[in-house]
Length: 139
Image 1: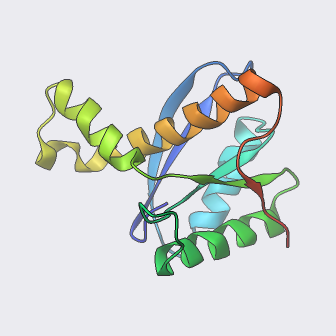
Image 2: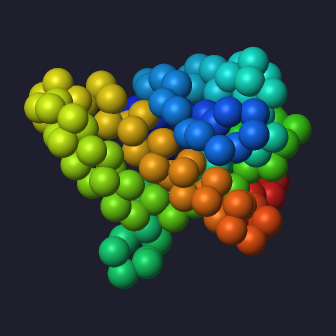
């Protein structure tokens, strides 16, 4: 989850395929817009990327992500989980570059692509052991 933009991805109803949905500007409407997407797609869980340092420590960005996730959990009737997003942006940028997108062209898509990477990680965990990935957020 970025401080300026939030990439949103969703899965198919069976939780197999993650696809990019939209990039939202972080502003006063972000939570409401996500709640509308949750309702529109009948989501069962929301995953929020937790930007940990490479050493696993939580900095200011992780605190902001946790606060955002808690706000979401307070307005949604479904579970919200924090997912380690280390290297998701790097992976997304690499994939976009390999697809022929230059960095300047891909800025609008990198947050969505990173959201796909995060969601794919969570879905893979669910398929592997049947449990929700990440850390449950409580309000």
